[in-house]
Image 1 (tube, rainbow, N blue to C red):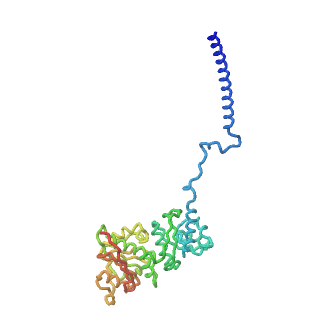
Image 2 (image 1 turned 90 degrees about the horizontal axis):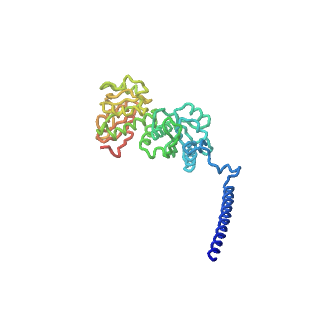
Image 3 (image 1 turned 180 degrees about the vertical axis):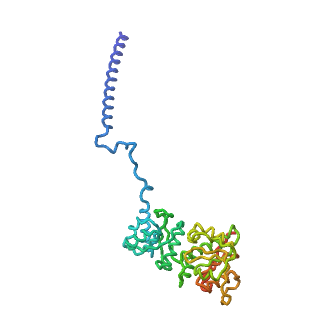
Length: 354
């Protein structure tokens, strides 16, 4: 009996367990349905849905107008430093409106080779400086523009200048540099002195000076080189000189032999190996190389001790004409500049490539 009762109790327990399992399953099913109802998005919840595959992404910083951002920050720097001039070197006229703020407008100089840019700058009341349209690098653009502005009187000695410039033929302005006219550059100081009482082009003088300093420092393939550049009053200089060898620049167009074009400067350095002088016209056109200078013999010259015939002839030609001569010393690489029969500037090399 006990066993039977036991079995009966077991059956009841089993039936009870099955009922409880059914109840649990029903409860779990109802809870799952409720959970599904909770996670189901509402009709107005558009932000919770992922974006479609073909949706356009938000524009990155590189795709935005970074030029305007750069210009804004540069103008802030100009105000904080209280610069004397802001030199904007760019041919694209679409950013000029940003330079017309009252606090900076009178200080802005727009330097470009674009006539359209010049007209718009004048319309906006901004100063404009015309510079050559050659493939200058950024730093050379700044030097050429500063030289031109100094020659035209838009900048003067000791002025603090904020320069904005970009790559050649690019509307993007990506470089900002602060400089003080005539203070941080021996070349600028030398050119400022040379410009007094002369009609020479500052750009041409600076181009010749850069070549002279480069040749004085580097030489030619490691060998020291000495030569003479004579700039300006070219008609008189040609009359007081004669050709020693065949003129390597004869037969080329004036555009192909203009010293303002950086692409021909390496060729000019090679011709420094020729005996004689290189004659440069007022506008930068190279007239001849290998020219023997033949000034009058009765000139009284105060030639410093230790300098030879190259310096004597270079000094003499400036006494007989209105030209300026640059002499590169083969021994030391020093560049000496003569004007009106006198030594005007001496630029010693801080070091010379061995």
